[in-house]
Each structure stands twice: as C-alpha cells, then as structure tokens.
Image 1 (cartoon, rainbow, N blue to C red):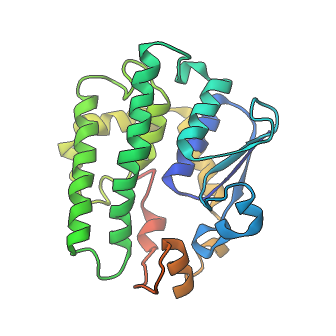
Image 2: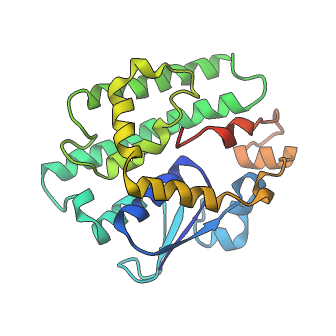
Length: 248
C-alpha cells in the first residue's frame, strides 16, 4: 500500500495520476493546507518543508521512507513500478527528465505565482501580476511550441513529463489565455483527459477534497500562514480556487 498525503493542488494531482497509471493500491489522506495542517508536527515528520504531496510506500524500494517533492515522487514511482514512463537509460530518459525539470523548476513556479496574484484582493492589476502573466504566456508558448513538433513532451511516448505538466496546464483559461491560440497544447490535454487513469485520478482527487471542513472560510492568520507572509497581508478569494484548476 502507498500512502498519499495531499490536497487538490496540481502537484498532488500529478501524483494521483501517476499512482493510477502504475496501478498500485494507494490510500489518500487529506492535508488541509488552507487551515495549516501541513505545519502540524505529524506532517512535518513526513516533510520538514511543510508541503504536499508526500508519499510513503510500505512495500516498494522506498522501504516506508517518506518521499516529498512531486518530481522526485514521479521519478521514484516510475523507476520502481513503471519503466515505460521513464526509461532507465539512453537519450529518451534525458529528454523526459529535461521536460520534467522544466515543469518543476520553471512552469510550476511561474504559473503558481500568477495564481497567487489572481487570488489576492487588489493585486490583479499590479506590476507583479503583469510580470507573472507575461511569464505564464511564455510557459504556455514554450509548451505549445514543443508539442507542435512532438506528440508528447518527452518525445514519441507519454511519460512522467506529461503527467507533471498536465495539471498545471489546466489553468490556461483561468489565467486569461485563449485556448484557440494553443491548439497543440489543447489537443495534448484532450489526449491525456481521455486516459482511464486520469479519469480515475479526477475521481480520487474529488473524493479526497470533499470534506466541507477543508473549505471553511480562512482567517487572516490562515491566509498569512498559507502564503508564508512575515507580516499580515490582504485577504485572498479562494472561490475560484475551488471552481477552476487542474482539470479545467
């Protein structure tokens, strides 16, 4: 059994998809990140960074060792259970790893920061919001250009690079971009949407996040803790967070 600790964020979604792709039994545990559950002593024992996702594999090569950071989790699961999603050696492996790292180091941070400025009251028209919208445009453009020449991010085959980028690409419309200008990205998403593992992951994430308590209003202290603020800041509107996201 594999334990998955997470929420409904794109980085958790990618791990849920991977777990469904490999077909191993797993159990989801909701970490209510909006109300500080990621900073409890029990969760920090799993990940001292206080971030989701985390997995604990009681049967595989992990030997019950908690593994955090979504990119590391995808590599672990592929190397342990699904070599077709990450070859053990050769040029194909490095193509996949390059695009995986591009997602975790470049695409995710840029798109996530734009989410931040869309959520925080009074920030959508600031210089910072405009900067991250420009960076998001670059991310989506880079992915579109890549998919114009190959069917999958890693080349000819579906891989952990696609699994990593797929949930983040679901913010395209929410970020204010016209899908018609990204036909290859949209077609790629459609192919991934149709995968049975992705449909099962969608259901699993919906079940994981169905607890109404996790959607209770956030206090000012909750917002400051969630955003890692050293000083109190403006409130956030998470209504869009619940309605749109990785599967949009």
